[in-house]
Length: 544
Image (cartoon, rainbow, N blue to C red; front, side):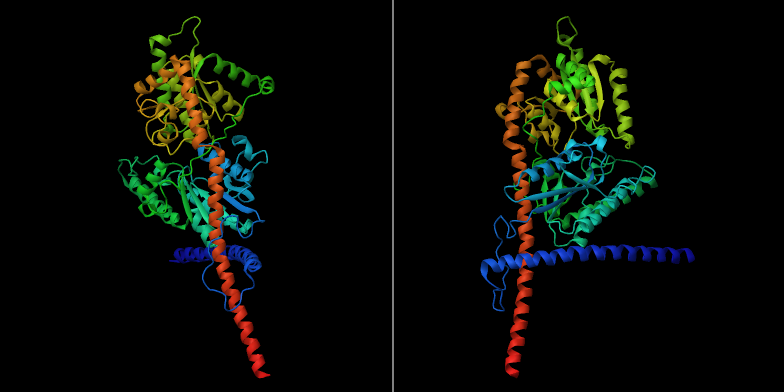
């Protein structure tokens, strides 16, 4: 009984402690809301005259962009859990950079708040000062003895959300992705600031213990039941948290459909076309200069090796769900084809497996070793024809994409997949799995209008995947033609300008709607003040 009372006492103390800081965060944001409301009211009165007791009570119509406060920058804060070198991180960085470039719609200031940012394993834009990065919650554990990762991720992002409201109370829009649980905290501390949620994929479906339809993989025992209960709790947290978003957008039509299937209540909130924001790529591709090659012997050696071979490249994080083993098995089958046997005067085939490998993630380290063992051990691919690269630099990535014959992309049910789009921007063809995002991003020259597609789609069977790879291996002209079509597809659908304009316009609209509510409050407050003054004046006049 004593322990129970002590526990309750500690819980009460912790609740009071948290509530104390939340209260002060709310005070800070409320002060900024009042300040902005007064500015909006002043701008409104400058256009329409002073507010009186007889002023119309109806909410004023939304002003079209630019906003009433046109001269003030739109302050946007992104919240992202781990700013590494994955596809989701590339999207966040591109969004931040794109918004900063897209100043014609509205001046924009961007900050990225994250739980973890390792400058040695991050995109250059986050380390060279181009994008402001603020780390919050890094001291909180990412797991407890290798477990409870979703709990820790939720707590870390919740803390980052609170710290954001405390440090940036004048934020005009929040952009959240991956961890929806940050949104209730933002709503509590900064309830009048709009939140845009960018949905890559429902987080609960990214759990390796689940099937594609979200059901748990068959297992038995009390530990399994406890895990299902534990995950079910956070499924509910995710579903409930989605309701706190002011606007929700998805990275593909495929992701939208999966999100709607997972959260049916969102069906009407995520529109089929207007709320699809395809991730962008930079159309001006990075070129590796002669000086860069001269300064780095490893880069020079990689450039020569990739250029002198018929090279296929796989770029993915070292995670089992990325199914990179398929690329290795298919490549071994291509090598076994008679027409590609090593011969004098013939360029050899080579496969380069590259991607992010976080030493903090046990799966990354283990799976990298598994892939090496599969290639050089079980399949006995010559070491000269397969390479494994970890945490490649931007220069190394540029070498691979510019000198390869084709990209191989092996994840199934991929949410979108930015790497195939990057490859097409380099005018290189893609071999990918025929489901998920690549159906939208790449297209299939064999089953769609070939002039509009940038690659070949395959089932996840090594034999079929190998046949698709062989099509590009045997015919350089065909690969170049499909690659050129892919670049045209990227220009039309996935350019940075298209995405930046789309995102900036949405954020301005959200801020305008929020400002209208603040202005309506300001008008009502001014009317009451005017009525009070008029009443006092009338009373004084009556007394006199």
